[in-house]
Image 1 (spheres, one colour):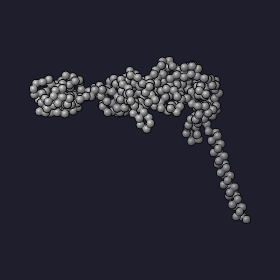
Image 2 (cartoon, rainbow, N blue to C red; image 1 turned 90 degrees about the vertical axis):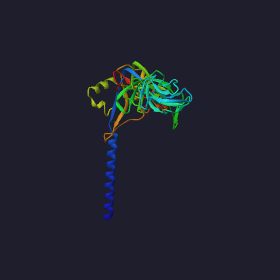
Image 3 (tube, helix red, strand yellow; image 1 turned 45 degrees about the vertical axis):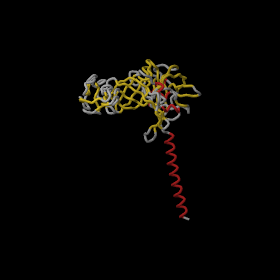
Image 4 (cartoon, rainbow, N blue to C red; image 1 turned 120 degrees about the vertical axis):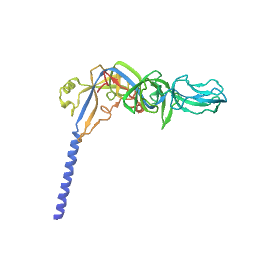
Length: 343
């Protein structure tokens, strides 16, 4: 009998301890604080950019070919690696006929013949590359290529030179794309304005400016929501916001702010910001999805916006993820008001 009593007591103790642990854990989860996030409607220069990786390539690289048939070479006057100017004599012939000259400035990268040989018309006798005139050929996503046009400006970063930025201009867009795993990209050629220090083959990242607008109103992408095909933001209560800026931490953690729904119309968009063309004014404060702070101090954003309503998506310049209506992408760019633009 005593044995059964001891067993029953042990079960009650273990069960009670488990209940207390579960209860305290559940209570702690229920009391997990949330940080209310807001952003100020800003006014400034808004830019949309698309980006693509590529390599540095020479603008001019060509074979130098013989225009004379069955002539014997008297002398080869240059060697591989030698810099030449347009018009410099490269090869002479024994019969005194017109010599082969450099068609442009550059470096002779290969000599394919030697004195005493006979050359045929159209035969490549040398190769010339101009390393002072460079470009990058960047692969641009098919979703972004409609925004790109010849003449647009670009900024170019070189992986090997992280502290330098180069400027360039779009000079050509491929008519045919390359498909990999169901995703097509198109080659876009960007001429590099001042390629000093660059070498052919270096890896590049080109950001092409596809649209720009001065004095634009804009908010972070995750401030804009959609429902039934209409877009809106949650405008934060100004009194609550004033208390928060004065240091009342109760408004920034734990309590919900009062807010009102404001319908908006949007314009351009990039990976970070959305232009607001109607519905808001500069300086207003909009709510962003709350930041949930767990007991181990990890933080994550609440999904689904406010009350399960859909987030913003589908605008131009926001990258491949917009194919599913997301709010991120590789189509970069920035909104700036004397800087990056903020939230």
